[in-house]
Length: 64
Image (cartoon, rainbow, N blue to C red; front, side, top):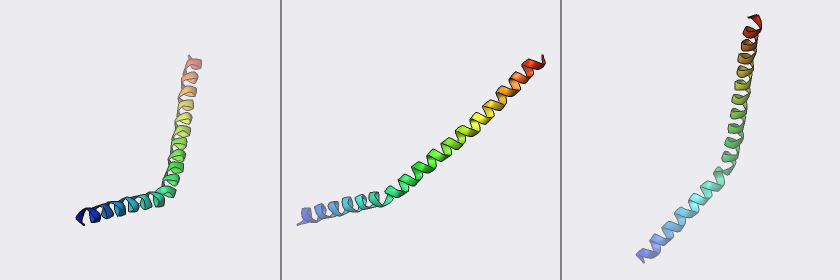
């Protein structure tokens, strides 16, 4: 009887973890989109900074 209750408890815990995983799936999708947006924004800022450095470097070369 003890093994039956342990098995039932395990199945209940596994089912609840699966339910939590299903409920968290939309959150994971939103976090994925948000992470993609943040990385894209950082890449754009880095590209603008790099372009500015290149322009300043070329400007100092031309002035010489």
